[in-house]
Image (cartoon, rainbow, N blue to C red; front, side):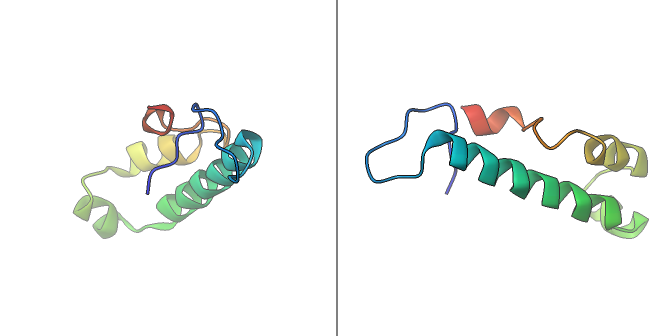
Length: 69
């Protein structure tokens, strides 16, 4: 399920701010996990150590563009 933090909230759903914060925390956690992968695991997913470190250094509020589509 993909969440769109750019769309207005529907009645009975979490407010957009809560959704955005939840997404930010999820991305932060994923970036920490990416940083912890060894070179073999990074090669399996097609990333270099440099690319993984660049992604891991992004701030938690810098969400991937796909989330806002």
